[in-house]
Length: 353
Image 1 (cartoon, rainbow, N blue to C red):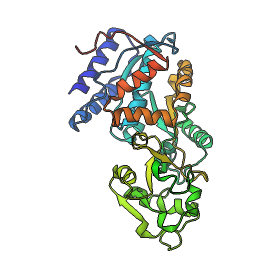
Image 2: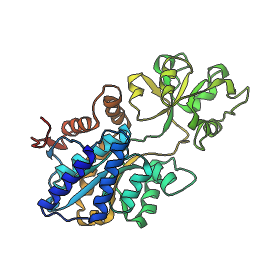
Image 3: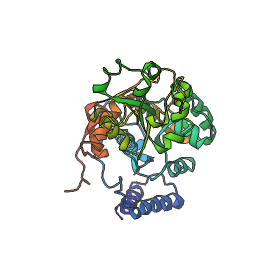
Image 4: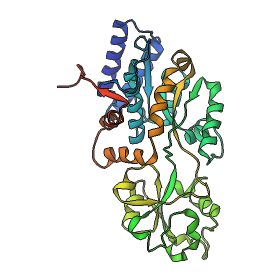
């Protein structure tokens, strides 16, 4: 019930400070989601966030009179990105309600569409394919962002410029095998390998996706199931997460990965360049309610500082600090923000003793 208490505490604070309220419907939904989180046995991300003061992010005039609700999904990268947004808005002076750690993409989307959350950091490919219902992604990262921004404008949501990080599919090889495979660095070079070396470890979902294994091979001039292309016996199907260790252990030469997964660095895997642009772009970008952004256009300036520094390499390291080293998303986000000079560390009177 900690999450429910955190929401109630946030509501009480807003009333005491005479903040602009959103009404009973919002409070009910926030509490309802908090109960769902605790009922599912998930640790609520709202329990504690390190206090952030201004750094290169300066306080925005009038922000102290505005409540801002930040939301995110409940996997590692989203939690870290969500906490970065929470800390950024704190440093800018807003009264922030932390509604990160929401289970699933659609609930986060509904919070944003209904105006019951103000800010999230979302992926361009997810919005294009899942929320907007498009059948095919756009590999060009700039064009994908522009298309999503234009399409979502009518929904009262503004997409700010994206980060370089692109959390899309990729193929990786254990680094010690690169030389044995002729110094391979690009997917187009798969055709140059002997058939016996074209071995793959993939997940069941990737095996059947429209942007998955079979169309990827076709895009790069290889026929799945063909003795001259990639025989079916060369493809192993693994449970979610097991692909990384299988690839590292040499069960195959090439494993399906996500480009910002912390295990890539931890296992010393080398990601092959998608040099013919098969995979859709999944750049992370801040999404802000247009109404809020019109009132506080400086929010765009805040994220304009942060997002360019979030490369795929940086995100892999941050994810690894959680998934490999055991850190918490809030602490990892806070330490990175302080190190980059975006925020300053201040004493938090609400910190647990």
